[in-house]
Length: 167
Image 1: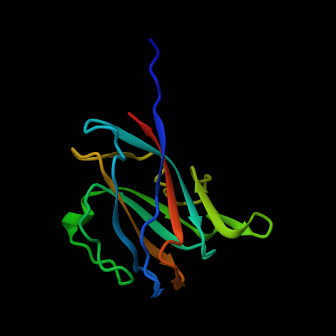
Image 2: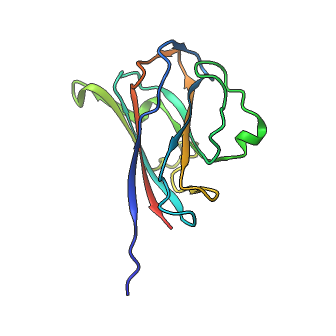
């Protein structure tokens, strides 16, 4: 009997502050993704990250996946999480401005980033291919920190779609 590969595309739209952000600010606190894992013994490989940016801001950011739902700081303020909270981080995916496409030649109402790997020489660790584990939970959490440029968002401007392969 052949092994069956199980993959999934998981979508989450965290709540953002509508105030102006500065570099290093927490964009959104850990947002639970319930049932990220189908059971307590499964691990997942991150295969892709797609970001739908309805505000067409193309935010440079670091997206983190963690098994710790405790706060990483206050939204719209500098990240200041305790070391024990940071110990729960399992994956970081840097998102840069050139990851986005948009405008009239592509999509009039949003910009889209789709990260599946990085080109050699980009000097960025893509986070794609990282194995994550629920630490005896079926939930995983996602949070983001702004990496460049002051930005203002509507509360639901960003949707993240995470492609995973289960092991």
